Picture (cartoon, rainbow, N blue to C red):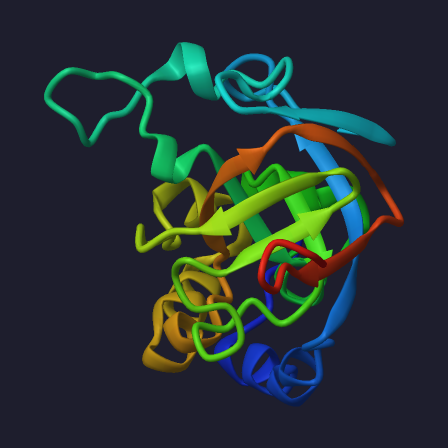
Amino acid sequence: MATFLKRAGLEAGLDHLRASPTGSGTLEMIVRRPEVGEREMLDEGVLDLAEGLVGDMWLRRGSRDKITGTPDVNRQITVMNARCAALVAQDRERWALAGDQLYVDFDLSVANVPPGTRLQIGSAVIEATTELHLGCSKFQTRFGWDAVLFVNSRVGRELRLRGMSAKIVTGGVIRTGDKVQRVVDGAA
């Protein structure tokens, strides 16, 4: 059974999290969720405008938040700071349990990546949305109550420690190790 860091141990990692690259980072992990509770770590994935991460269940799962149950394009992709995943999971093999598709060594804070900001990863481009991405009961079961309080705190929300919701604006191929950078005026 995994051991969970207490709040003090999580807060001790804040300086390392705040030191995430702001201009150009790296895609550290791609995780596809083909079915509920299943995770596949990929070296390469395809981001598709209609499907999301190809082979992921986002499209089939739909949305619990919408009356229609249709998939929420503003939550098509979730991106988590790899440093935060490493901190809460304590083991790279456990990162995927967070449930995000992309793990990046990049500053995802609201100050660095405000809603509407576009990021190029490989040949794909995603856009940060206004949709919150917070720790939930599944996150609590996997990483502990202190981790939920940490990522959902005021500082956690500002830094987007739990992650960032995004939509795909340009489909393309992504690979672990790809550069993550802001798109400025249509060019990375």
